Length: 176
Image (cartoon, rainbow, N blue to C red; front, side, top):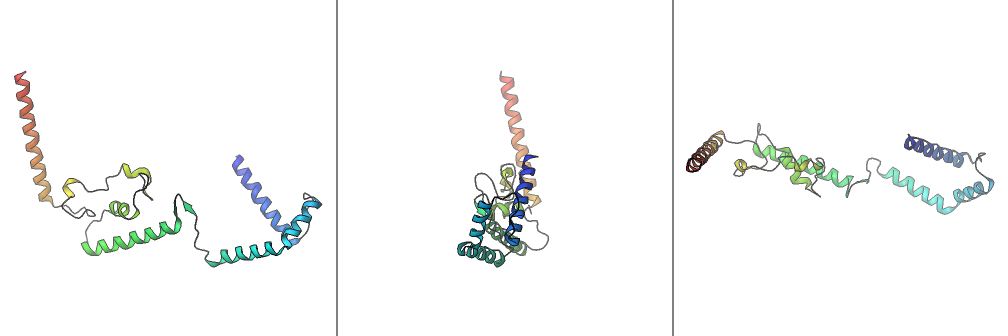
């Protein structure tokens, strides 16, 4: 509530001061001494040059803001997003129609990880499985197009390993 009130007060004061500047009429709540200093400031060459410079900057490119979300500017984020879009299109062209592209892996590859976070994924990067698993290591890491026969072979190998471990455990239990 206090934050909202403070914002509303600041907005009102900004607009009131702008009206004073434009109309050049002293409101009752400003003392004569302060009004005199404000008029001197508004009439100074430095202030007029600053206003002209700021107006020119606002009009130069209204669609671009260089605010920073952390340590990377919004322009750098936009460039990386464009790079991702281009890389995704190239990957789709390379793999052909119908191939499934692992967007998470591609996104992390382009955006990079900074302080265990990835822009657009936040701290979820540690919980995601965006990196290739053992069964995908021989294939392209950005696709999920896995050969079923190789999966069947891997499952059969794992089943044999489990059976051998079970036999070993039974022998140990009998020996005890």
